[in-house]
Image 1 (tube, rainbow, N blue to C red):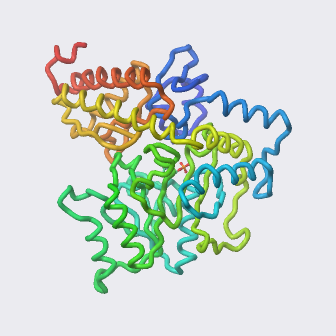
Image 2 (cartoon, rainbow, N blue to C red):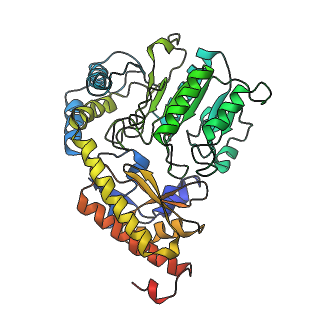
Image 3 (cartoon, rainbow, N blue to C red):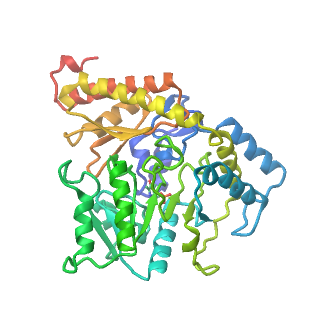
Length: 430
Ligand SMILES: *Cc1c(COP(=O)(O)O)cnc(C)c1O
């Protein structure tokens, strides 16, 4: 099957099908198959949606059983048994063991919906309109979320002025020597800074779209302290790097902070079904009934697979330990690639199972990703100039598959260096 149908009928706005130009037909675990039966190893995982791979058999069975017994599929925010099961499972497997107390809000089922709800609630709670966000942040494509996102191309798509947001430098933005928390604290403390007191600060602990920039634990702790000092809410957007991507269920657990509001979505349903969840400190839950709503909130099919996912993967520490081991495997592999291909001038980025190589050459990451696709590996780039090759395999990818992916990255990078004439021809030959 060709891509003609898509070219003819579908808007130019589509983008991933340009990086991965084939027609996919089915998928299982960490592999997708196109309509010619060609397998692809998936180091993209639906941008972090498919943390447990494609069509996990236990989740699929739970979903099929629910459909067959005529379970409710749509219910707005009415009470259903599927929702009750999810609420109980989230309490039992996630919040209670961590000693966390949050109220749960289901906005519309996408990440950007969740961010909009978080921003609205923070503004309502504090009665202030500004929100601080960070350089290279990505929080979604609706107007409120775009206003707190960094990327100029995406921001321009709004077509109107994006307001009520203040951008501050993320951890390490000016290099290791500049303390960006001190910089921000000074702006907030000084009556002459020109920065109005905001309602909240919104942050990603790892900037997944922004180039795999990691906020270290010390920085996050001091960020939380700045929020307390200036009476601001701390919103963590854990949409991409929560749900186990960094090892623990929440990405901020290592830092030991307790954000006021947490956004979850992408991998939450465990099966690729749309679901978003806002966690709210109980005392901040001042919504009036219906003040923020949406037709596709209680997505019951997603509740079914999400509850099953929590029971299956998050009722003990096995997955967290497994992720740590797999992370080490990938880090070691990437370090070997960095060492053996000095012409690439690559730098390791990320943590847990969101890892990457950052290059100085502007085309190296995209060229290597394109070549990797031809060798049967789905891998994306990230960063404001697409300068980072981003590894995002399902958390359940086995070690042999991780090694196979590293092998393809190694070969593809070597070929990309050759194609861009960054190394002599014969070194690129294999
Ligand atoms: C993907 C993403 C969003 C937006 O989610 P959508 O479902 O695409 O609206 C917001 N924040 C982060 C960190 C994301 O990775």
